Image 1: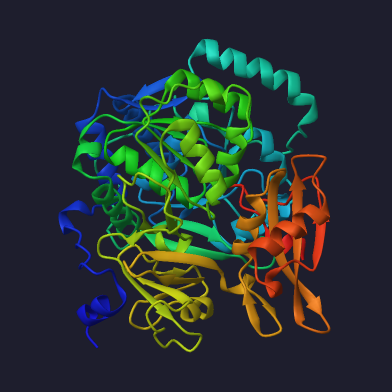
Image 2: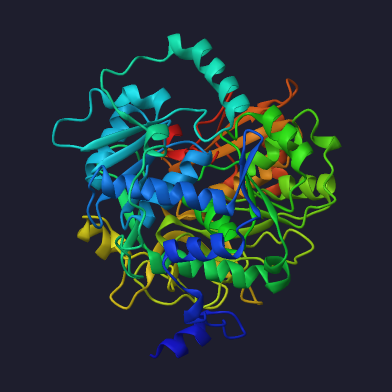
Length: 552
């Protein structure tokens, strides 16, 4: 069967448009073009300080020259960036790529052991790390690892008044931060010394790896997706085509509280809005709701990215109901399923629907998304992006009958090269003809929109019947008095597995009896939780996605 035949069988009713090859370029070329084209536009704001594209480009070129001239790093060596959102992250990210090197993103909140595993897996040659967490490196780096470490202070790249305020905060909390035993180069020094910034620096090719992005668990050997310049740039071009010319042609301000070290915000916010010359408001900590509300009041963005837990938390945050949303044009939800109840509350409060999409690290990440001009939340994840194919398959790789549930397979230019130094896992998820087995279960509607039902590994089998945790969670979350819910399968002698429900109550009046009565009115008998447990909070990852595996 030809590729065109596959698209007609499994894809949307209308052929998916193809990308223009001219829209795909290396990330340094994309960044340089944006900085030339939009030189005087505001590019990034953090802690009330704003840099324009010309200023960011100057710092990026300086840091690139430092990596090449002082650290003497060679082509394709890996540099770990262990930073929260902020101007230093932006400069480090584009500086590493500008030097012809590869970025390895690491969560700064990771434990020392988690960092050790990831740094060892990526075989990094250098690290850029927030000084507050640099002490974690003392016992995990030996003389053969990471030839150089660059420490970043919270106030780096801020003007004197803001930097002085940050330094004061640092002095107040410094006693609680363990002192590192190592001497590191500093980020501020790297940006203040003279280096050769000529144009003869190494240049990357489209099929060179740009990013090593960790995915999956934090124990054992993690999987690390190899994303090339072509993968990431193609996904940016796909998103830009989805946004449309009118949106991209006008100056836009995007609010980014999600961590840039996660692929969702990295591609959909950082890379995409650089490509269209947008102004990115980056927040260091999405858990600081008062700060988020304050910035939203001040900046009144045109676009914002979020996840279900963040939208839900913002809706209940003091001051949220007085934010002026008159400039808001686009709200993108991803990372995890958006609950219909949260989507309804959000649209009622802001006047704008949450446009839900779907992606995964291995696809750079965006695969599908609802129309950008949608007027209401659809409860689907929309249509595939340009040059993207979808197929719904059985466990044996056969095509599922129209409307049937199966594993979502994806093929397109945004699909990763494979897992770093892990050919066995690569062969397990990538077919010989380029299909990515996502591990997500879903189906195509009559209008060929993709609806996800759950992760394949999370499906609960009760007496032979499949229970999708997300369905039960959505039903429970719609009940008044429920703040959060999660469902897992637990062993059961009679039925093989039973449904167990974890709830974070928002009201002291919520009881197990009320929850079960609600479930009985909305769910088939085999889907009703056998066990219900109330908790003060649920374990979540850096995006706020509930970690079901930690509840088992």
